[in-house]
Image (cartoon, rainbow, N blue to C red; front, side, top):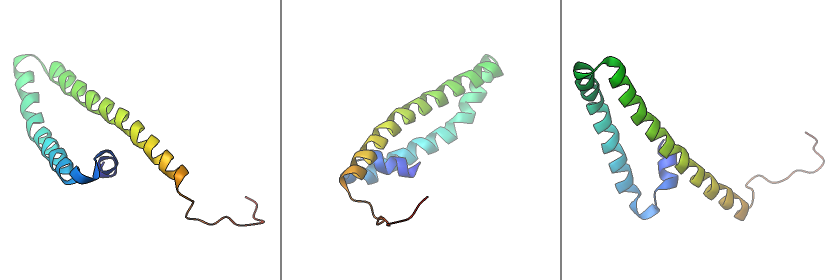
Length: 93
């Protein structure tokens, strides 16, 4: 996850980005059981599971869309820079 974050965040605000990333992760870890219990007490366990599953699905969707952008950046950077491994002659693979 940190590799994805380092590819997404601009270099000059990377520290702030990781600070906010950790804050949101810790807040989610702390609040998830509270939210689950609150919904389960008032509605049902199935409803609390559905709410937390939908929030996880939203997070996964956001990450999936951001990863595609970083893959495009990495591919274009790879095309611009030469390969670090020299080509060998006469080798068959």
